[in-house]
Amino acid sequence: MQAFSSETNTPGNGRPSPTVSVVIPALNEERNLPHVFAKLPADITEVIVVDGGSVDRTVEVARELRPDVKIVQQTRKGKGNALACGFAACTGDIIVMIDADGSTDPAEIPQFIAALLAGADFVKGSRFGEGGHSHDITPLRKLGNDGLNLTVNVLFGTRFTDLCYGYNAFWARVVPSLQLPATSLPQPADGSKLWGDGFEIETMINIRAAAQGLKVAEVPSIEHERIFGESNLNTFRDGTRVLRTIMSEWFLARRARRRARRGGVQTRPAAVEHAASTATSAATSAAAAAAVAAIVPAPAPRLAADHQVDPRPAHLNRAVRTPAPAERATELAPVTAEER
Ligand SMILES: Nc1nc2c(ncn2[C@@H]2O[C@H](COP(=O)(O)OP(=O)(O)OP(=O)(O)O)[C@@H](O)[C@H]2O)c(=O)[nH]1
Ligand SMILES: [Mg+2]
Image 1: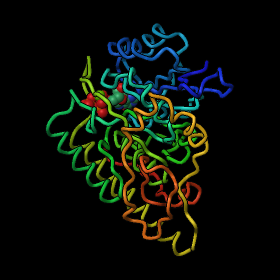
Image 2 (image 1 turned 180 degrees about the vertical axis):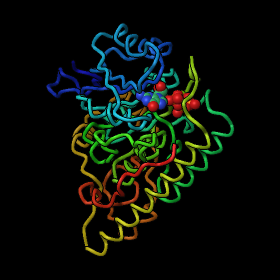
Image 3 (image 1 turned 120 degrees about the vertical axis):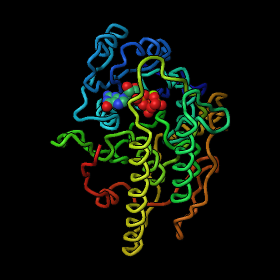
Image 4 (image 1 turned 120 degrees about the horizontal axis):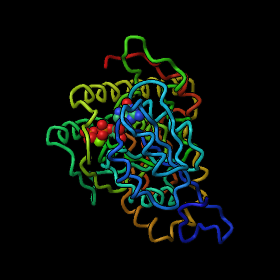
């Protein structure tokens, strides 16, 4: 199925439209799935529900609602592992990640797609940028979120307005550069989670996308309260994991930059083949233009003294310059089990 044509990128003009996979991690969400599925745009190519061992009818309900749904059983515990398993099962050109609890509105998906078609590699929903809002976040979590957000912006020279939100979309080709923990690794015997398997996944993905030099855009998003059931997130435990993730990503990026400088390696932001080819044509689309208007501006590359001048449009968020994915692979610390 062809999906999400912009005015100038339609099957009619001979240029193929991207196909779109939606990944939905779900843990005991049988009552919420009907609300989520009802709002999925009609031209989504595939829907992947990643089940975390639900003890309710989550899987059955998903199949009843959408017989063509792909059900994936995650290989370990945690939302991060669920997303990694879901991404691995995607066949679409674009991957959109949303929650199953009714808090992220699937009706916003076209805005994310428009920003990708307008040239972004990676698009983040933002509850706190202009036009965004959260009906769900508590004052304590907002405070923590602001602190973590500021920390990342200072350390990485980014301009994120909402670091910890789980509503993102990106071209599928971006997935390898995120270097998520392999889905084939075993679950630690002591029941702990691997780094990246928990709720720190959103932070990890966002930082890695920026640190890889991908063009990161933000679009406004309205977060709703979970409709039924209870949150799986623990403010202090998961907030601490997020903070530790930020620090560890920063040390890795710094070490990689130093090593690259010592070796005289020319490091450039990752290539943007597909996005670049669609950017010009999509720029005239009203939807894309609206989305681009919300894209975060380019930050000053504070950590990269020898940052190369980047010819890309100023409305795209360029983050610190770090080694290309292949080079960075050797820099990433081995995944270690961490306390729950
Ligand atoms: N497959 C799977 N899904 C999970 C797991 N933990 C959470 N989820 C799903 O991930 C999404 C977000 O989880 P929530 O518990 O709502 O956490 P949150 O949205 O970060 O936090 P709140 O704002 O408090 O709701 C929901 O769709 C959950 O069902 C897990 O271990 N496995
Ligand atoms: Mg939630």
